[in-house]
Image 1 (cartoon, rainbow, N blue to C red):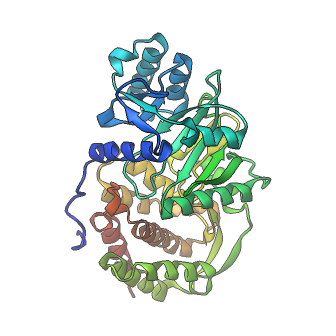
Image 2 (image 1 turned 60 degrees about the vertical axis):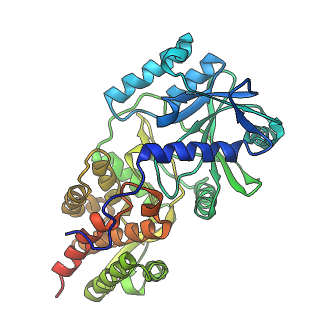
Image 3 (image 1 turned 30 degrees about the vertical axis):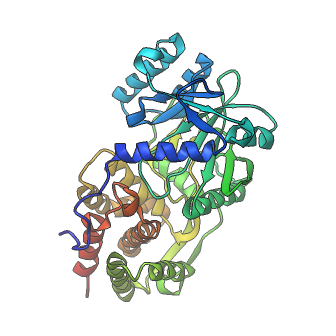
Length: 408
C-alpha cells in the first residue's frame, strides 16, 4: 500500500537540483565582492563531468593537483565508474581535459573574502581545494577536499550553512572529539584539525583518512566487530523500552512532527509498538547513525569510517547493522520497499552479534524504522528532493503493516 499523503513523485530532478546547488555553493564559498566571470579569474575550476551534471569542481591547475583531486576524493562503487574516473584523471594529467571536460568556472575579486583565505588563516598553510556537489538531501552541505602542493589530501572541510547543517557540523565536531582517545580496535576515524565559525557558517576541518589505499574484503564478522566498537565505546545500559531515556528522546522527536499526517501516522505506530512491547528489556549503546557503504572503507588492518554527524549514544544496540544492510540494498535497488522487506527479514541475523535477546530483535528493528522515519521528517528530506524522503511510498507502509500485523 501507499500512504495517501505521499507525493506521487518529487518535483525536481537531480540534475536541476545539482545545477541550482552549484550556484548556491559558489555564492557561499566566494561571496560578494567576489564574483563568477566569463573572463580571466583569480580562481579557476574544472567542472566534472560538466555543469549540467556537476559532481566535483577541481583546480584547473596545476595538472597534478587536479588529477589527484579526482583520484583521491572517493572510491567508485562499480568497475564502470572506476574506468570513467581513470579517464578523467588521465585527461587532467595530460592536459586533454579541454576536450573531455570543457566547462570551467572562473572567480575573481578580493581573495580575502573567500573560503580559501579563511582556511589559510585557520590552518597556517595554503592549500588547494576541490568542491563536492552531492545529490539532493536536506542535510547536503559544502564539502571540500584540501590538497597540498604534492597533490596529497591533507584534510576535508564541512560547512554548515543553514540551521540543520550547522547543527550537524557541530554534532560531528562533538562526536569526533568524544571519540578522540576512545579505544576502537577495529576502526580508524578522523581527527578534528580545526573547528570554528566563518561568518554565519559553522566550519569543521578533519584529517583525511587514507581512502586511496588498497581495499580489502570485509566479512560480516569483521563488520560486526567494527560496529560493536562503536556500540560499546561509551558503555552499555539496560532496561525496558518505555522506561528508557531513549524512549523519552524518541517521543519528543515524534512530537515535533505530530502535526503532519506522516508524523501522526508514525506516532500512532510507535505508541502501538510501545503498548505491545514496551516492557521488553533492551541493551542500549551508541551508534554511528549513518553507517552506509559509502561512508566506510575496509583496509587490511582497519576499517575507515567517516561522516559522524549522526553519532548518538543510548540507542538500542544493533541499529548500525540494520541501517548498513538497508543502505547497501537501496544503493542499487530502485525498489526501496523490497529492499526494506529483505532487510527486515534478516534483522534477527544482523542483531545476533550485538547480544540482542531473541525476544527483543523484532522490537529493535521496528524501533530503527521509527527512528529513521522521524529523522527524515524532521529534516524534511522529501521537500529537499531526497530519493527516499517520500516515506509514504516505502517505509511507512512497511512499518505500519508490521506493527499492526503483530497487534495482540
